Length: 477
Image: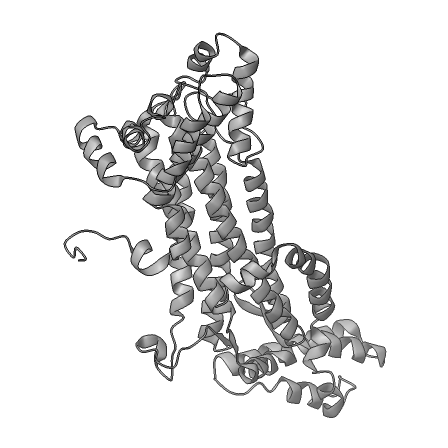
């Protein structure tokens, strides 16, 4: 029965996926501990310690079958989680009991598991980020030629296209993907470094044979499917690793925040909207206003992740000498919740980008309202070609533009700039000739070809490499 009198994390009930929650679950954690104990036993046996195949087989038999009741009862007595699970594993594996955790410290299972967990979680983050890129790529391709207002200082500037704007969102994510892949490739296990990182206990086990002690780390890494272990450490791996990993997550949060802010503004302009469910109710479902609640949630969670990065920076910088324990309580919250939050962000990002509504007529109307002002440069240059004086024309057009802008902004009337220009005897162009210059396609520059080139050169190769059938089936929204 659900305990309604205890705090429950919103990440568990509202935001994070089952897949990400499992990666940070007790089950994943303690099963990884057992995999590490098996890797340690196999490596020590391979290097000549008196460990039998029978003992390893026994450990493997119970690798997935954790006797939580025994471990929890033991922890109440000894107040030590690692040794409680060593004890519980030994209850199931009496023959292997003497060699479980042989020579190791608590950080052997704790820190190595943290690295395994982060790599697994980064893999899921990578998949979802790639899937978002696929959605946005399809969107950019579809709307590569649709002119829309571009904004600088949140004021209408020259035109762009809806698809070109989407490439800006994609490009941010491509940088994030590069960083995620780098962080994943750079992750190394702690290995078996001992109490202060000197491997003294293992030197004793192997009778001072340094080559065997060095090889022990290599073997553990191999059994855990890692390239290597860190070359030097104190008792723990450097907490700067957590900072680097969360920096990659912060990057995704920043990219998502940028997208969600743009979408929130565009929805206010009624140019674009996030998907709308038929049964949706509340202020986001009113016919005259639909609040961008999904994008607002992306913004909220992104802000949390960006701020959370500071935790890892402080933890890294305040570690004393070979280790101090003020990292533990902080990192078990900050790292896990950063991943859970980014997972939630990407889930929403996937949902929004799978069904963005583009109101083409609204976009067209807003373009046409501003287009006469943008066309003045073209009109002036054409008039110069027909014999007009550039300086005189510049001043005439400037005055007419200001008058038309005042009429629009202060008087709330229609834009009459075209009439003002066509009626001015100093401008040698008829109204029809002026109107012929107002095609939006004349003001989007290289937008269409930029979209095509960007998708072809930068996005398609990435999707070909990373957008697998597994992602397509797992992450369809």
